[in-house]
Length: 89
Figure 1 (cartoon, rainbow, N blue to C red):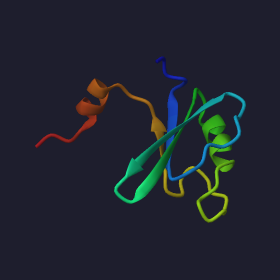
Figure 2 (cartoon, rainbow, N blue to C red; figure 1 turned 120 degrees about the vertical axis):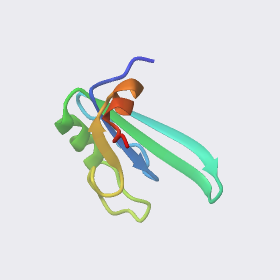
Figure 3 (tube, rainbow, N blue to C red; figure 1 turned 135 degrees about the vertical axis):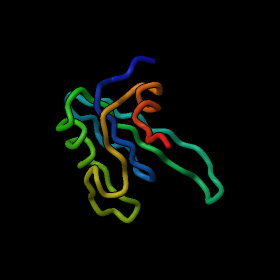
């Protein structure tokens, strides 16, 4: 599949929010050792669209949370670019 944008937020244990303008939301479900697991991916060309979509998510206890609470947010890079950025010994 083609990436939806340059910015990506990964939110574990979060149900997918309502669609936000300019953002693509994907929810992945599976089973881990501790039971059902949910992973939400929010992609967009603009960071503010990712943040707006993430604000619509809620934690399992029903409290609203933003992008930085327990998820990861950053610029999308290729695996080769990621490897080049790693420290060398």
